[in-house]
Length: 239
Image (cartoon, rainbow, N blue to C red; front, side, top):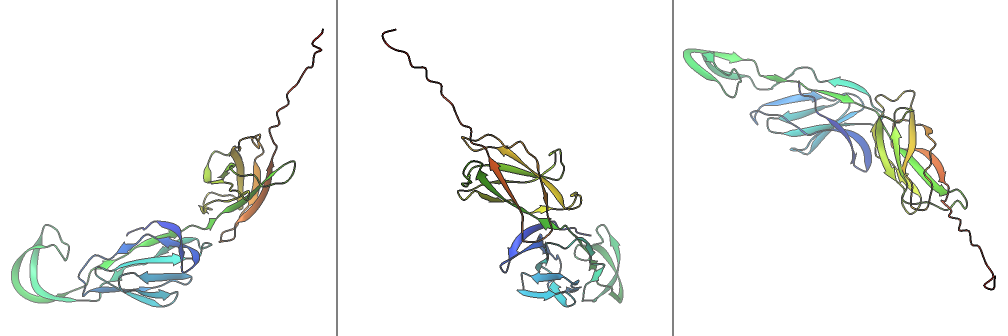
């Protein structure tokens, strides 16, 4: 079965998990009927139709469709075998070469029969998605600090990076969504990679608890200014 990839996109003003577009190859007069699982919405892009969990969506040969689900959804959905709607009347043939219904080399031996419609199947693996929002302040006056780059990691040793973010003029940064697959107990680790000019790098590895969904986990950190001290020795010109 086909296994389309899943990404996070905005659909109708809401961030969701979305499969890659899937195209049903075949005769446009043939179709499959997809029963949409609970918590999932299926969209037929070609026909501009959609169906939510518990309802059905008809997809014709040549149509392109996709599925969406909440950011918190996990697990694998398997469509099972989805038979085509059309049974064909044809001469009974001795098939050779490619056995595809649409590309068959054959020898007609003269008997009329019906053939079962071809079926298709696919599966989707949903992976819960989360993100982190960081606020960076000056350690001396609490003013926002721009230009700090932080990484988000799944392990305390900061070896497996999940996302990266840079603070803006307001001192905040929000990571992109990352999968919670491989994240233990919802705990991720945040580490400064590059300090802004005029600041020391924050060496602390910060622990953050995240949950799947649009609302990011928050973290406030600070950087110490890299103050420069200049020693001036004054001498009397007469000495």
